[in-house]
Length: 280
Picture 1 (cartoon, rainbow, N blue to C red):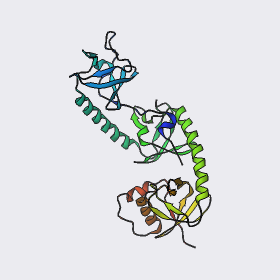
Picture 2 (picture 1 turned 90 degrees about the horizontal axis):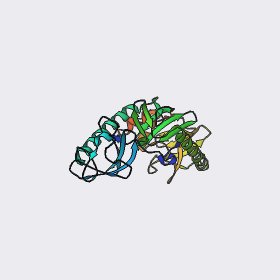
Picture 3 (picture 1 turned 180 degrees about the vertical axis):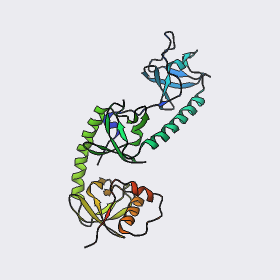
Picture 4 (picture 1 turned 90 degrees about the vertical axis):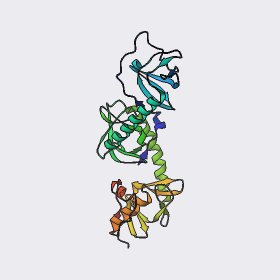
């Protein structure tokens, strides 16, 4: 499975949208050119205008982009001014961000369509999602995308990638994945340690492998994992499971008592569950 980073396509996250009714700015309205500093109702600095967005402008507030309607601004003594304080604006943006995060979690369900930044192109479907990212199934294979690259809009679940950016990033990620696959192939030797997703916990050791599966010897018995679940990390050969996910999945596969861990339930959402394999 390949992984995309936002930097691959120079994609920018969707800025938070403060509530308001967008409307064209009056002809004699304040200067809202990029770089212009805007102020609150008490004259305190909000931040500079980052970009023009039609009837709106994107303003940098506390280092983050916030979209505001142009008609929310008036001419002030210092420059463009809005009718609320920085504290009020920050609270409104935080509230909107919390609502957006809640909507995103609800939308990130297996099978959900993932659309491009403008909503016009379906890039793939959600396979699974957790705090580490979202696995998207595409016509050319599965790819892991950072969770902060997603947002919910009128057309549903969308990413910060345009269709062209996503295709370019997929190509670059595929090249990186090919190099990783070669490294995994070299590392898959009987007796080699298999570490968890974070690279700290040792899950077991390689017993045998073929093109489709890898048999791992654990303290609870032997289990077969899909070959695609393995990657090379800084600490060596890793499988795409946390220690808790792996323990719960092994317990399910072998019939042993499932461990009571915080991540046990997450094992059910893993892309491919380990299948029990009798030891020879």
